[in-house]
Length: 65
Image (tube, rainbow, N blue to C red):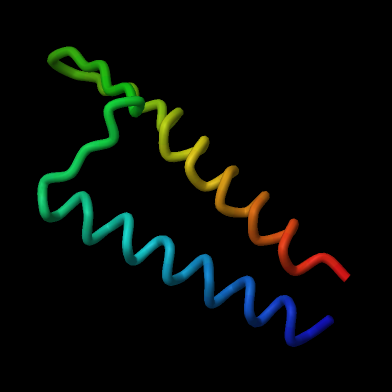
């Protein structure tokens, strides 16, 4: 159980790093919505949530005991 949690934590850190590098290089997911005015901003990461959900579903499917 401990190894699994450690592995999942490392995977999440790697995915987060890839997402941050993608944003810094100018990549924006077309399904992430950002609305804003002068004094407010609303950000809804729908596309990123879908991608992470698919990746986690595949991970759990292939590594199921």
